[in-house]
Image (cartoon, rainbow over all chains, first blue to last red; front, side, top):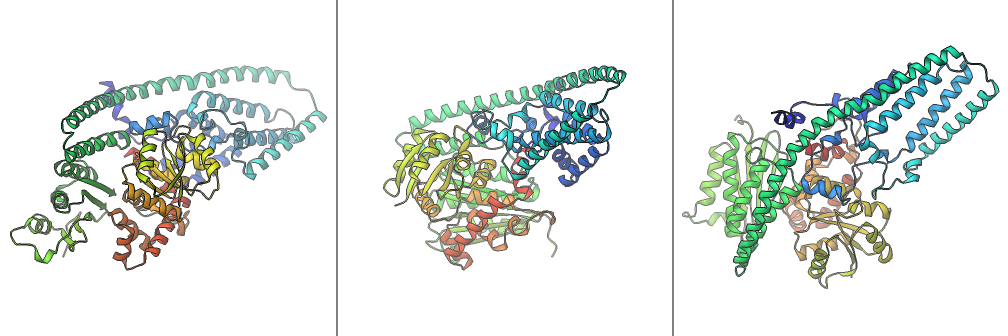
Length: 425
Length: 209
């Protein structure tokens, strides 16, 4: 009961997430920009302005960092890709923050500014609130974010010290580091020169406050994460059960195929056909999104091509650009495509057919091409009406268009076009 | 003769490719992971590297990143058709992408093309390119030149996606093969350099569909 609810959650509700691909600190600004649909520069500028005006920006950022989940949590990849990523055979997701260099530099700069401030306006004016903020952020970071920290590891899993300190080594990160260092030194110098007495009562009050706030900051993320992890875990369990079922089914079919191949070892065409169809299934499961059949033009075309592949023992390569749901209007197009692919498989004699489909807002176009024998469309015997009846006439009847381009020895290409809305004359 | 290094973590596949290539190219070395690939490429400086996309040690992209600027040209070879892998590898510096089901003669032709400094687009890669550059984009914040395909480049890409060979593309558009190659290289450049938001975002969005 519960599990069915949570498994559909990420798709039904548009949730804001932290962006794990475009980050300086936690990806909050870019995630927020994506969620609100505004340029990320505005959001970043907003945070900076708010931070300058009394530090609300920092608190706001930290809070969002705390409550927004990273979009890593929602990345659902095909099993083959996830496995390759886990095994280190694919590059890790983009890691700008590979790169805690900028963070260290910014921290040094910040500390320098604080110390300079104190030197100018007296001790304690800004130090404690800011120190608190920094410690808080560090704690939050420590707790809320393994995904984030994973990024400063290099691809072999070691922390790269040079990379950690200087990032990609751009001049800006060096400059920030130098500026921060200089400010710290200057601040310390001034502080040492003008050291004065601190109000003791203030300090005790602050210490108490610090304890309480620190406890909240320490435990808060933990409690929050516990709750969100629980929900994630439930969704993950449902998903892995579905996958296990699929994998079992797939392995079963591989076994069947291997048995059939052994039985048909003397018939190369049959073996090639079996191998091809099994390859298609496996590849689809490992590397592509599971697209339920009959839901989209691309999925329907792949299904149609797979059918012909199995029936005629040819390889059909399907490339699709754009996609749309299959409506009533597109059924004739699918039938015509099936006919065209089957024709190519039967008559071309090359064992290879290319299908290309492009879906735009206005229409779906399908191209079926082979490099086979070809024929002269003018001289087709009237009794061989396959092309005319089932392709050209069918498309016309339903408001579409079809064209057959072929000449002997030059292959054949069938072009099908179906507008997505009734075209007005 | 074109010298080639084969990088793939499956020994059986390396053997198969070597056999299929036969005498058409000179296979100077093989490697099975990122470290050995980097070593072999530095040692032999081949004309072309056949680079597996999924490779222990961080994938094929990591090999190109570690070698930095080099004259060696990379042709990615993969069993995965996943869009993220294809686009990621091209943006990492490969001059082409073919899947492992490619036939021997086609692979030889592709290696020759890459060795000459041209791009190699399989129909599937052309489809991805059209997808990635499709749709309207906000006019602000884009580099006009890099962020969209010209009408001609789009036509070439569509023909490649439809399964046309270079020669057939040239004939269909009444241009020379050289011009087709120029268009392909230009598309490759855009694919690699475009800062287009959609392009980097595209692959991850696809997953969420």
